[in-house]
Structure formats: structure tokens, C-alpha cells
Image (cartoon, rainbow, N blue to C red; front, side, top):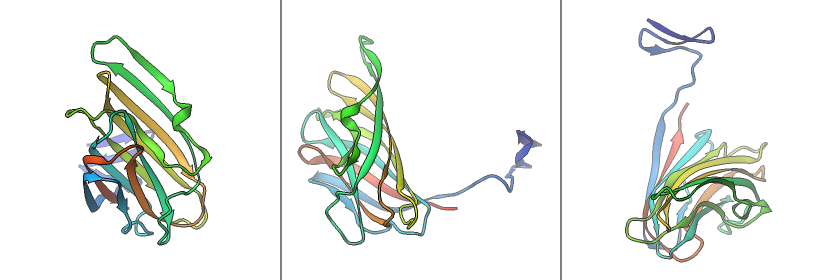
Length: 201
């Protein structure tokens, strides 16, 4: 039996149709924090894949109510100060249902800024608090286009709230990106795991 949408066969006899994009997530590397000032991915980001996904799991800060962030660089450079334009909004909801909101956060975005881009905000450092999510970097090796990125995150923050973050932006360079660094805005990354995947065609 075929599954059809808008006149296009998606699945026929259990197989995907020829017009449907497919791909695999290929695990390229894993880094584990343990009182780390930062975690840097300095290899594996090249023209092998069109997009790269970072999955960060239970990023726990040493400092309370801080921000988890990233920056990128080119070649063998280690300044991590590329120019970024971005937008950020969040939804929040408290455990006791006393507060809920959907907000644009101007203090988290950048307009041609070179700071580390905040991904998770207000991350608590209590034993059960952390943030997790994904960051996708699109076509970092392009010599033609700026480098787009999106992130979707969730944070268990102080005040016993769930905070879901939505980030989008671009790195304003046509030079190939080769490096990504993650860190907390204040203090070390006490613990957490970041995995880098290439998205195969």
C-alpha cells in the first residue's frame, strides 16, 4: 500500500519514494566536560557533509544562573570571534503553574556581534539542574554563502521553571568554518556531554 501526499508517493511497499530526501546522522566525535573551561571541536567540520548537528546533553554549570554559549572560527584560528547576527525567543512555565510566558529576548540576540552566542540562558547549578538541546550548523564549508545556524534547547532553571529556547542566526562570513567552541558565560562546565554528527545524504 502506498502513502501519498500532495500527489507525491512518499512510501510504496515499505520503501521511501525516490523524491524523498533521506540521510543518516553519522557520529563524528564526543566530548565530555568535567570542570572544563570550554569544549572545542577542532576537527571533523569540513565539506564532507552539508550540515552538522551538535547534541548537548545535561550541560551543568559550576556557576548558578549562567548562560551556555558557542562561537566559531575559521582555518586553524582560535580567537572564536566571528561576526554573528541572531534572534532568540523563549517559552517558560513554572512547576507550580504560577507563571508562563512567551518572550522575545533582545539581550540574547546579536546584531553583527562577535561575542559568544547564548544558546541556553539562566541555567541553574543545583544538583538536578542542567540544559540540553541541539545546534545545527548549515554548510559551514561554503565559499559563497553566510553560515546559517539554528538551536532548540530546554533548560531546568532556578525558580523551578522549564525554559525552552529557540535560536536562529547566521555567521556573517563566506570563509569556511572549521571550529566550534562551547562554554559557560561564567565559570566552568561542571559536567555534560556534547556529540557532533554529520548529516549524510
